Length: 202
Image 1 (tube, rainbow, N blue to C red):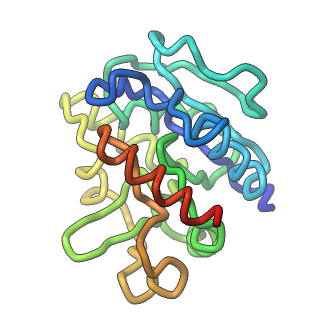
Image 2: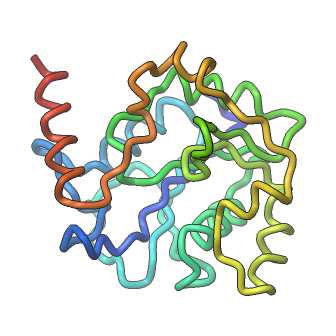
Image 3: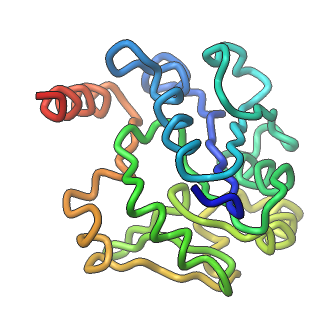
């Protein structure tokens, strides 16, 4: 466990394509957010869950501090911002609540690369994973500038800060199947996640 890092779990998604909020999705007998929070408690000294004002059905007793978006309606970037403002540490591991296959060794490696940069994230080809990343509090000012311009694209922050990218070769050493940042956007994704979970349980 790294007491110098806070884990921020983003749980404000409406899940329109799923017909329910992502935070309440179940794989087996537990919600995904319960599993994600448990994993984060094994990695970081403090765990924050950032949710939206309309998200009122999180599982009870989550071992995490729950905060509502400071700026509601500003997409995932607003969630990242809220988590960074509420965090008490310089470095912060940010993940989405709908990532059921987080790889703890990969996340630990990412945290080890954080000192000296604003952000650590994964880049495979042209695809970047800003919601599976480590952020420094130095990103707060840049996000505020984006808000002033009406820019809510998390990916645009990458062009403004000093980023340490983990390339595909590095990633393959920890997660050759690239499942750590697999997230559930629709019912097909949910079905795929259930199949993977069943295979892993055998």
